[in-house]
Length: 370
Ligand SMILES: *Cc1c(COP(=O)(O)O)cnc(C)c1O
Image (spheres, protein in one colour):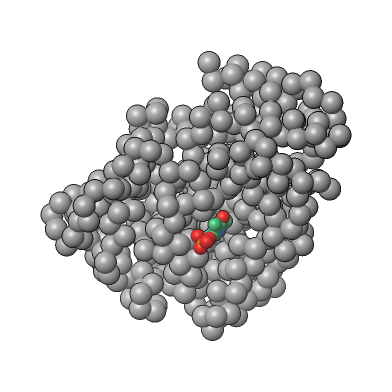
């Protein structure tokens, strides 16, 4: 079965092997050396002032960011499940929230953010997804961050990059907190989350908030290449192996380039066989199609072609399917995926198979890849 869901993503074989050794104690020079090397790679990936690893799924890092960086009112962008989650986290932490809600195919506008910030001087942090995975939508986070900082540089910009860090180079000039998670673009099992923090974020954190997710406590430890609580040793060993694998494959720039061209080629291939791309501004992390037969297409892809793609949630259940673009994806796998979608349309009596999807994919992808 080919796992093509936009998280969890497949873990490369050599990374699984690296994680299969005997358990290591976390308070040892051996593990600290691994931690130090991994931290260096993370600084290179995030380009931020500080980087912190937490033993939690992505939501843990979202909560740590909100609780440590928002002290009054959070402005959250709800164009899907994950954006909605930021608002729920604020309320659960006793904070006020202002929410900008849009349909899941529609990105928030810079103007709407600016207006909300001008209308409410209590807003001291903004939380937004770079790539909203619920519909495969790209928000203009860099532009939002720039516009907000021009109004008030003290407002914290929290960017959820769980399906963006490792997908494309993120301009962090105006971002205070950039979040990543292990099981999406970083090709690991779930359980590790990472936060990149700006200088201003470090100032605002001060002595931190909460206990387990107190970022001040973690910063102090992790600068000494250790963690406040027991580290997710196995996942950190896996993360180091991921970085070394990306390096061997040509580095981050090549990963970003491959991902971008693959996403472009898949979108063009699916449009060429009459399918419609759901988000108005698609993210590079996944290709999302809305279709009356979405459910049947997904089922047939799995049962007849061994391709596992994701569906939709809530009001989009049965209405969309999402194909992952994150990670080191072999070309022969993605070529098989687009061809399978075309074969499914033939089986459903929608369109006679003529190899268009593969042809269009190949024309775009291999012209650049060769
Ligand atoms: C997966 C995901 C999360 C975090 O979800 P967890 O299940 O807690 O790892 C947050 N934001 C986005 C955009 C995601 O795709």
